[in-house]
Length: 231
Image (cartoon, rainbow, N blue to C red):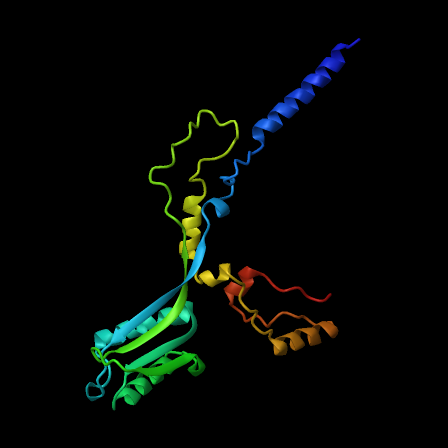
């Protein structure tokens, strides 16, 4: 004979199963809307940047406006460029002087010489010097304008969020990436500071304080706290 306790146990188990079936996401074969990375993926693709500038050796190279454009272009390369930056000049008697001029300017802006590629092209065209480099660009497909209302959200037995869920977050993430290459592969680690490591280990082995000297009145150091000491 089933008593009241058994009935309560059965009722509790049934309620648990019903609640679990309502909360669990269903797979419709298209994908889970609850995962923004799958529903609104960020794609990374190479993007070629070019700049064409007039150059005249007799006019001291570049005019002020062109020099400003050149400076911004080099800054973009140093911030997000991948590989080398190229200099292309029309073939002719003045090509070597033009390439040398831009090569030196790039070096002065901090571009390593081993990342500067130079060459000449057969078509003179308008006689301009062309610079170029490859960067990576992050892209996310546009969110549905006004939302996707193709489904009746008064009946949400599958407990799934709207299709636009996470789209704006993915767009913001793609826009804030300083270097989209980080989504493709991690950056190489910078070498460790061997001199500082030896200094700290030497103090540690002698039982001395391992932190750097703090100057009187250095509020930034006082506020940030101190490194651990050997007691």
